[in-house]
Image 1 (cartoon, protein in one colour):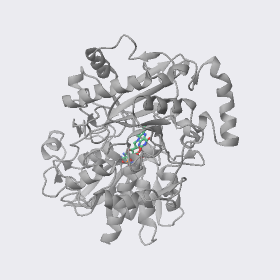
Image 2 (cartoon, protein in one colour):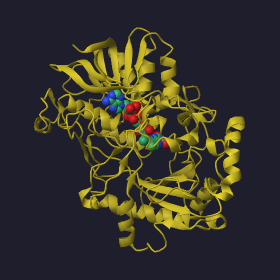
Image 3 (cartoon, rainbow, N blue to C red):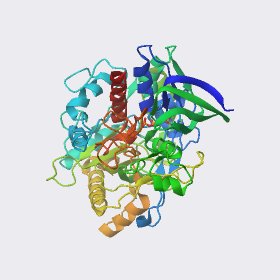
Image 4 (tube, rainbow, N blue to C red):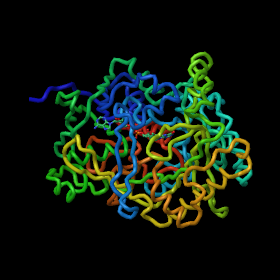
Length: 535
Ligand SMILES: Cc1cc2nc3c(=O)[nH]c(=O)nc-3n(C[C@H](O)[C@H](O)[C@H](O)COP(=O)(O)OP(=O)(O)OC[C@H]3O[C@@H](n4cnc5c(N)ncnc54)[C@H](O)[C@@H]3O)c2cc1C
């Protein structure tokens, strides 16, 4: 007999960016009981709260699932890292805190693809309702929501150099990437409050936890869903080694993210029947779209190092390193207040394009261009990612065993047009970094390095150093019910199921042109509204 850990009106799997919003919104009336099942621990660690602490989170097995992609056959077997947060707040507790929504055409495109009710005019009020922008409210921004958005308190002087370099390359300066136009370079706004990370756990879950109708199970992994007919009855969990069940009285909501929500469905016999059969999993609901349409922003970086400035480990940086904890403790400023990716922006690699096709992430710090992240020296780093990749991969199970990571076939750059566009992005990025604005503070380019110049050499560099912007989406996409590959309807109800929804980054039919945290929290806001309206 499996132990029962209780029964709830709403059972939410995953306490990440989406799960925390859902917990708050669905519990507010006090009429319904709910629980969150979260595989990771609590998010109390100071490294999660202090912005610069994020350098100790990625690749840390306590807070990161540390997935890797499948080998890319067309890229000589290359695999890339797929970090995913594993703690309350989810990936939003280990991310760089950039507050970016994408652009209006992203959502209009979703609506055109069958996500009726998700056009820009539908979703803008939801973004605004969540936001409390320290700059104040206006037509595009909210001023009194729970999600605090602020400018970085003391951006490194190199961020100004980066924006100036852009201007020298005829890329305008942009002071608000969520404003009327996305194009341009500048400093990113962040989800921080008083210069501390302000994740969905801080903004939404803490409020929910003050209510009696909310329970959170940390260190508890959902292994499978117990399905009867087309109904979810319970979630079978592993709670710090103890097996048990959590019963679903009303709805089961999957918010485990674009990798783990489809993986949980597949383990539970919900997905492409033929694939399930091969693994010996009985098909409960045959849904060919589960796990398909996986995509992410492919990215490649340029590294500058051994120069006079930038954060880093060097003798000349010693005064800065010694001052950093005090500056943060007493003024919430300095290196510890840095979210690392302080600047960046959006640009067109071809002036005839209607909208930007690449995004930059500039870090005023020396990062290792080999395997190590932290190395000796000072410098700076910037990556470029492709905003609207056409390549698509798939998420599949490697085994029915819940402790075996799924096969994450990102299939990056499988469409040649993506390769060509990223190559142009890399050339543009190098040109920005070579602009005169950097002359007085320049660190030599360490990678790709001065010997890498021809298109062929740059392609080789892309192939060897390709990564992503850590924005996997699309594996349970919203769509028209008539369409074969739709996984959830526009109300985020799982196709062919009676009481299951998927509400997280996996439902994006197409990745937004920007970072995915704010869009995911918006998805959860809308998902909660849909659920409450259906009661
Ligand atoms: C390193 C990094 C940097 C990023 N930087 C930015 C940025 O600066 N700005 C931005 O907008 N976006 C950024 N992103 C992306 C953004 O954070 C994510 O898109 C967003 O958090 C996804 O939200 P989600 O709710 O879909 O999933 P998550 O936030 O990942 O939440 C899923 C949760 O489910 C839990 N879970 C998974 N499987 C199970 C299971 N079987 N049982 C129980 N619990 C489970 C996980 O532990 C996790 O807590 C970054 C992501 C990463 C990884």
